[in-house]
Length: 327
Image: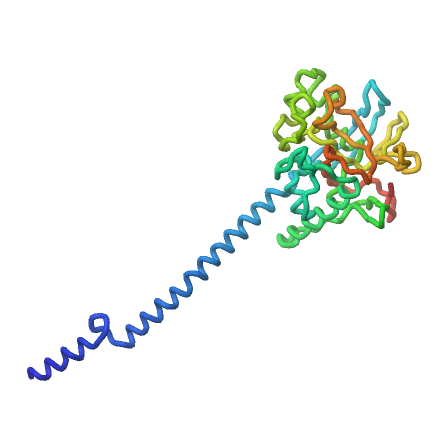
């Protein structure tokens, strides 16, 4: 009996982990190995999910905020120039000027002149009219990818580009530049005063970055007060491209004007026709920050004080059958 007890004790002492059967020990060891191998994968998976979540949040943050505008009549111009009544159809205008981060997310580059300021929330500048058109189409493509993932209706691109010829497609729903009339309608926000906030130039610094407070640089969008319809920087910061050629217009009532033709547009010293710029800029004084101020620039020319604000149609505009209207 004593020998039998000693034998069992020796067998027990040979069992690992205090008498657990070998197969159990091996099973536990295998489980530990599996868990050890799985933990890095779980960590990597969590990193991927966190990255995807951050990327989604960043993409949402870079999506332009659109302000719905009801459409209506606006008196364009000022005592310094031609005044005319126009009617604008409902549309959407981007709340801010396009930022450098938004541009880079869409175009893959940042063309801004850093002598005037570079940063994610600064307005993009140093872009040509053609680049603004290309950005609008690419922004539409980017939006469509997001809509497709969400099962939403896709937008239609607004511009058909063939070389240097650009046609604005009738009935488009994608992103685009506002027309000259749309821009002033949005900036005025129902007012008929010198500025969107009234006639007092002393208040300009509350709403605009201009030569007296900008320090020769652009500033983050949306830091000044908005106009009555919630649009920021309609005075100052950067000039904004619009669709129209720059030229004179008749003093007549019209609905959804789209500007003069290229043939009658004002020519620059090199003979090139010019496009309209709106809103003033950080490099000019208060005398050129009023709501109706217009300037002109060659559509191929770069400027460190020229950017853009996007728009979108709410309903088909300028119905002319199956044609496009060109400019």
